[in-house]
Image (cartoon, rainbow, N blue to C red; front, side, top):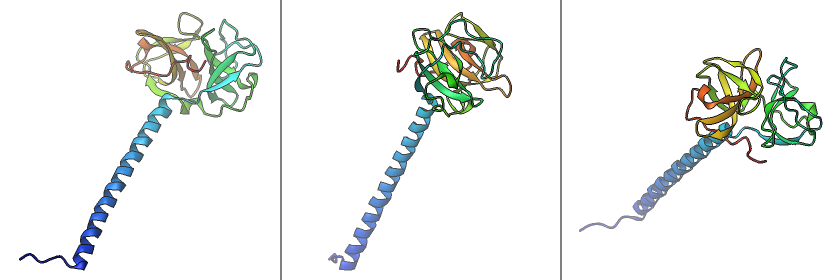
Length: 204
């Protein structure tokens, strides 16, 4: 005849059950935390620190964060809403002018309202990519002002894209020790052909 479990044995069985449930809950919480962390990381890579600003002075964008020898042919009027992505050399913001003109490049931060708002370095923002085919940076997503040459293997920080299908252009920052530049690069010039980024026109 089977004997009934003692009070002690019943208590021990309950403690073991509670322990198993507790371990299971811990495992579930850790898994959820890992998933949230992974999602947050991916989101941060694909969603750079885009800020909406207004220009205070008519501006011609440049490919570099210094008074370099080339500038865009189209000036952006004061009062225009623009989006800035990052800060370079302490005094310049990488910006996109919006769908009305579709230009991108560096602007002196003092030409923006709230000039100290953007603090993220360009090298710390955007998604990673590399140049697969030597090409020219452009001031817009097409045949506009030549913003300089990029060569195979150069590292890019990608911020946003325009166009569709094979006619896609990415706003990129070319992270060089000297002569760092930014502008639009065609999809055909980038090694990562499955690359995607938020629309540059998002939020306008």
